[in-house]
Length: 170
Image (cartoon, rainbow, N blue to C red; front, side, top):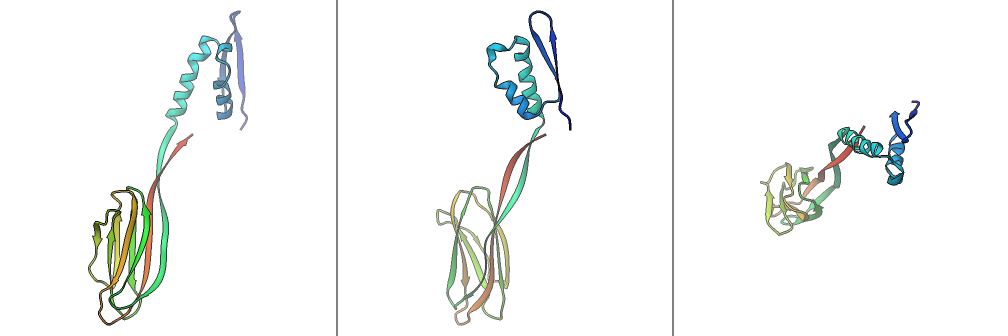
């Protein structure tokens, strides 16, 4: 794309009118020039160009996923595995626990940074839950084998989904 800048010098007072296509670098260069060397007319046009750039900007929200844990674990009867993860307010924690053998079925509990129970599931062969963090801090996720005699092998996954805002200007 060709970029051109047309300059017209009008009158004896040195009024300069700029028209044409300017890249962002050229626009920033004009804004950083010495204000004493510009006339009142060019000073008035700068806020309009900034306003035009602000009108062309929008905020896009994307969800990023971070796979924090993905392992197979064998848990003895009556024992538990506790995982810790840091969450920000509004982050969504996705938990998946799947029984991979004929052993004991897991139960999942999630505690917030204050130690309050925010999620508890029933014992099941497959557990899929989502929980949204109400406050920032360290969350504890416990996978418990409730059987008294049977060990269990489970496929455990923890995924954190975060919304990320990006300002896009055209």
